[in-house]
Figure 1 (tube, helix red, strand yellow):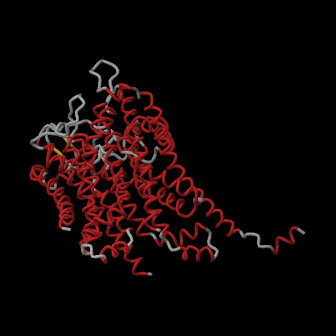
Figure 2 (figure 1 turned 90 degrees about the vertical axis):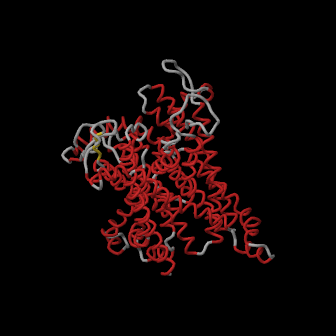
Figure 3 (figure 1 turned 180 degrees about the horizontal axis):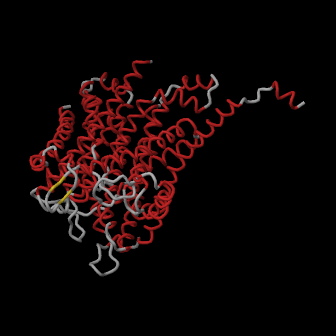
Length: 296
Length: 294
């Protein structure tokens, strides 16, 4: 029993150790740049002027857009798997969607840069530019790497995660409620909108927040397809960088202590964001399960 | 006759028709979403299989990379490296994770158990690149890279996965079994060793296989801990070792199409392993769960 307690204590210590070590390694950069680092733009390795704003922007735009695409798709897949699919299909398609989550990010990155990127750069982006070019998001010249491709890859990564949580949530809706709505003459969609979605609202938002967390922290696949660009652009065709992809790209070749420390400072910002995101999702999930236990 | 009948039948009003149409459209969209996810999976698997199969041959599995300018060569060091890295990570993570799960579900007071679950969930949600930076700062700074340090980073990724999977199986062990053992005078520890663990060992193993499949594909934790390597096959975990995901990452950045072919072939090996492992584990998990729930 003492042994099991010690192991659990080790997990607690591990979490604190990670936070402490990141803080410790980034101390030189924190004392040199202070909090101005977060709002400073540019990453100048020659003059050793580093700022995180470009990367925070890159992280925000890629993960929010990925979530924007992934949210309706995941909810739709969850609904299909829980309400619509014929019994035999349910297991097969559910398993396939979960296998999509099992594809390692480096394989998805490889596919993104050698297959998806050239296709999007040659066909999708010119089309978007021709028809929607008046929107700043779709202006600029098409390329085989860039923010749009990173968004697509991230979407593929978070859809399976969100949709399998959504499916579990939708399956947890008491069937009396669903049957009641159907008995009152509601169509399937009206039943979903009036009963299933309101009943699972907080759970679904937690699932989406968890997906956001995953998108924010993804380093390898994003660094392979986003093109390591600079600056803040509205165009989705431009190259960019995120907090995580910058660390993955530069940490190994970092030759000065201050550069290495600045990169860990980025990791610290990333750590705080992902802690906040995860805790928020957990709080929602916990409150949600309490409500259900207490409510019935 | 026909018009007469129409006036009194229950033919749908315009409103009903619209409701049915919306319903139909929404069902169509949901089906489309599910099919497109399956299509993306198929697309990725087909691209990897098509391009990867071309570069697979005997040399690929048995030789290390050819020197610059020569053709041929293989990735034996990456294959061996992944094997050692993941085996070692499993050896570190499995016992600790099982102990944590036992503590949480058998011994801990409810409040602490809840807190421990939260810590596991947060650990699970940490970006893997942060774990890479952490292990770099903890173990690599000052003493250099080594395979066991990479394994340690992978073990941190596996820990919450195995612990949560184990916890879920433990929760399915019928309380009557535990009570039976306790009633026979066994101590709680004997009960756990003699009754609870043997009942749930299948579930723990499948959870571990899923975690192994996840760890085998992780790149970010290895990037700073075991990436600068010699071009030889080594089984010694005190040396840095190459791994499959890391060499895919490095080869993908090369301008040489031959390197891309090698990256695809590695991706094929990795993907086949992961898909087979997760499919088997899922099937077994479903079976063992049914057995326990019965």
